[in-house]
Length: 365
Image (cartoon, rainbow, N blue to C red; front, side, top):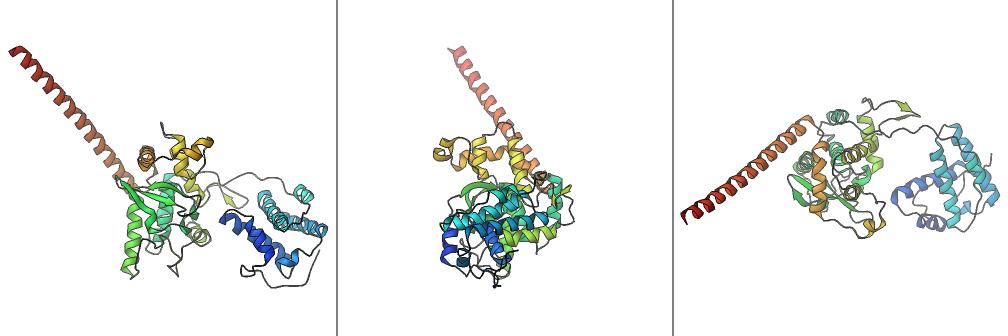
């Protein structure tokens, strides 16, 4: 084993030039966090003094170190994709510092791909159990997260960007627009339904009752101990996992259940949307934060709120989670059908009356 002098644990405050170059080659914050964890683990494992010191090791020695990391993680039972991600992170660090290292043999040493799991969506019934587990004042922010994801299909990382002003630019039939990743290049619009709007409003009012001053720039899901900062996925995910540990999310493979703890909620949204007859797939992808296969759609197609909402309304009732909200939604839908039928009857009666009036006028002549 290659062992260099011991060093203190790495931290983001240790911002060397080599690290700056490395991070400049990463586009998204999620990848940045993952790659930073990988290169820090690499540095910690071999007790390297600093990030710059990594550049002093000969490329062939780095190759052997990478292979050693692969063997270690393989023995720990980590997945092929997880270990490969570490290789990519380490290689990028050196590439961004103009050093080429060989990783071909390390990639050949990767374990076989395991059976994929975590790909199933939540059922409505199972998501109702989730809401029941979050039915306390202390769990109200987590309940907001779950319902926002259920009604708009976002990833759990939305919490890091969502401010009060990003909700409600458009309102119709009790639904509100929501801007996901506001201010970022990847920002996009979707909608939240009345069930979600009600719980979000309840959460905001609860914070006001505790003396918090809420403005348009306040975070919708702030950190528990500091409401001037937003909660991120690392803060939210463990809390949800702990609350839902008693819920059966299906067979486990490699420690992962068939239904991913939060991503299964996003999959439910997409499944419901795709299974709805007559929906426009391009508009659904826009609301889901995905690019479409049509390059021109991605570049030039910018549907407005009304266009998007017409599609959202086609499946919004199926997105509702709680039994009470689903019943209320069903009653509203029936009332709307009755109103539409009544309006059609009124139009027909008016048309008949006009025809009779014309006929009577013709007879008099």
